[in-house]
Length: 127
Image 1 (cartoon, rainbow, N blue to C red):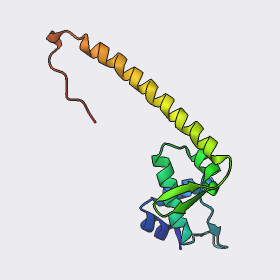
Image 2: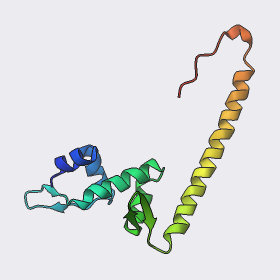
Image 3: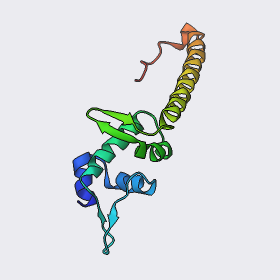
């Protein structure tokens, strides 16, 4: 299939699919004409990539772990011995980032709470 069909089947833009290729996440066959040719299994690969990005992993990390994951119905299963340790490191990195954000929010909450009432009502919080 061509890039347009892969884009249609996955809901991912052609530009983003080309970016995934640049990052080594997708490896389409290049035809003599220069067109990219994708296989049916690339649909599942793109979905894996999207899921891993949604989990907070960088494309560099995904490129290194993607060959060590297999689909098992509705979940991804690690298949390489060192992968679990890498996933634990990524989770620890995320936990540290979450804690740093919580600390920053607490400081901001303190500043907001210190505002004199003469400044008026605060704007509703954005979510």
